[in-house]
Length: 255
Image 1 (tube, rainbow, N blue to C red):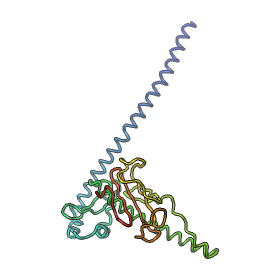
Image 2 (image 1 turned 90 degrees about the vertical axis):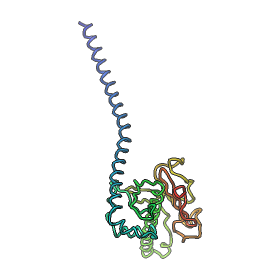
Image 3 (image 1 turned 120 degrees about the vertical axis):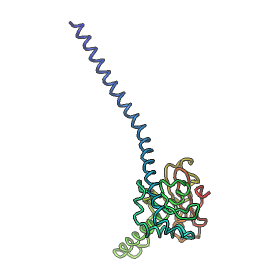
Image 4 (image 1 turned 30 degrees about the horizontal axis):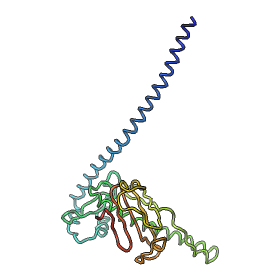
């Protein structure tokens, strides 16, 4: 009888051990499936959004907007963007992923809608995104300066006139929204060693942006007023666009 009980006890203990082992194995399998599935799902989502975006851009390109803009061969991109604001105010909804819609000249010199996320020309995509990001950053800096000026004025009225003369330092970064994503534009005092896309440059990952202010650190170009942007660099995984007040745009996105 005792022998039988011992055998049953051993069987139960083995079953318990097997149950734990099976549970652990199933958990590991589930984790591996998640690791495999997430990138696949992201690729599938990107492809499906790109298909929808390409179709929307083609429809817009075949529509009245391009007929209207077809004669604007000598118009700058900035002027064309303003026209686009008036002619197509709802263009932000064209891309399923919320990509910015720009105007880019095709081989015939006619402006065509171009998505900041799904545009096929990767260099053009970086050039357009970089220019727009710089504009957004500049506007945000001006907004912050106005807010600081108002605070300083209020403080000087409440205390002494000298208290309004102190300038608040710029934050570590300024956040802007581009292509439906938040981008941190990092404040630097010297140029970043960034000449190519982040996938081929050590120390950087994904989409990055950096800026320098005239009169701060190594930025003394003499081409812009003190306190204005003197340096800006934007890079995604593939290419880099760099702007200096003295030289304008450069980088491998322009080569």
